[in-house]
View: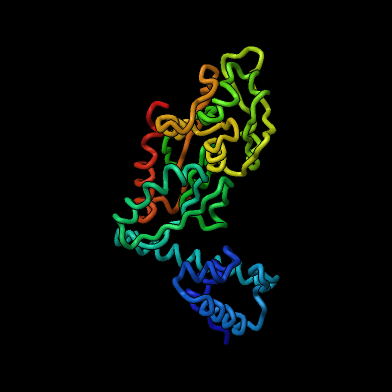
Amino acid sequence: MTEFSLQDFYLFVRLAESLSVAAVARERNEHPSQVSRALSRMETECGLRLFHRSTHGLSLTDDGCVFLEHAQRISHNASILADDLASRSNRVSGLVRISVPCILAEYVLIPNLPDLVDRHAELNVSLHISDRQVDMSTEGIDIAIRAGIPPRDTHVARKLGSHRRALYASPAYLAVRGMPRSPRDLVHHDLIANAAVTAHNQWPFDGDNELSTLPVAGRILADNTAAIVSLTRANLGIGRINKVIGKELVAHGRLTQVLEDYEDTTEFDIAAVTLAPRNHVPKISVCLDFLSECFRKFREDT
């Protein structure tokens, strides 16, 4: 008879997500050989090869994909059961998976995260940092922080604030290339584009009758917003950046706002989204309250 523990299913899901024995071993504070033996035991139990091994890491076999579907379902149901039991006791414990865009992770969430974990000793947090819009139900995400994306009917959204975007460059870049005086001057500058979200490469302007939107191909592109900030700070061109974060960098002398008189005033809501049945689970509720504190400056006048 094939027997697997709940921990086996958790381990398998993490291996499928990371495709690295070494990475999972580090997470679990174990030697990689322990993780490899656990995986080999699972394969022996079911008599199937679940992963291909190579010097580049792991890849799922067809049988492994089937095993993963069941492992995800079992792990998810076990988490729901634990949450329901915790709700009855109001105990804040367990793992919360938070999806967050790169720039908001680096400049907002991570600097404040010690406050959350210090308050709740039994709470574990897994950050999924990407500008990609995740599928919360299939990827096991408890909270997704989203900017400018309306929630689905099956989601509950708590507004954290709002923001708009503006153009910035480093003082060193502007000292060499000069300050553009109108949007039309941007054709003489290096512009940093977004390789992942093409809509972000349509730069809008107010107050210029001849040019309301500039399509930006970009001499340099990056696939996440945090990298665009880094490239802009590294004197590589003009980037379009979240204004709340841009203002802080301006205050520290690291960036200068460009074409302020032509700034587009369109605002985008930032929300913390949860799946409807889970927003009252204690561990998720405290995280939502924490996020509301983190994003307080996004509720101030930008």
